[in-house]
Image (cartoon, rainbow, N blue to C red):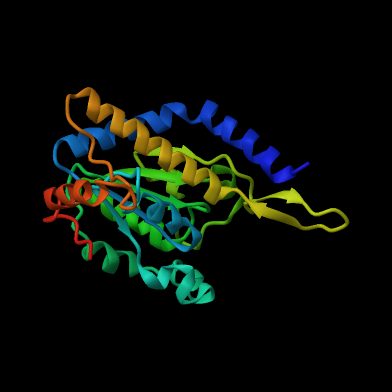
Length: 242
């Protein structure tokens, strides 16, 4: 028996049942924005940034995706420092001002706790600039965690659409026998499934409008490089892949 696989399957089924309306709300907004020439933006700190990387420049993924990957908020440059920085008021404004995020476009903000300064401020900045926001978060975790002093709202209270990854407070899902500890987080697994479902559904919406979805092909299969090159040329003014 592999307990994590069993719990993961059950959790994915729960998300599919309970979050379908929210996911499809996000899909409709993203598809409309892309059909109008927009770009989808994705932002997260710590491990939550992985959802953005999952959507960025990959086979089967949407081309017009701007994953906002600020190195100091990611694990590889120092996880202790990144944890401190995601709580730093004012940092979000610096990052936001570096982005080309336009009114009417959609920004997915990924934060399992939904309580730290940077994702909360990012949501407010987006709202002030007329950007549609989608929270990908864990509502149970948010409710269990204390907000910083002076902060009145959690991420799920700030965004236009809220998708709950249905995880548990603390993220870890399995009790370790003989201890008081829990192991094996679920947020990355479920967040990845959610953004891949969004990718598929958005592609279907675009195809239903008679347009070819801007989806990458594998560069390691025949014709992939040429296909991807013409798509990248279409979005070269908004996306700066190197």
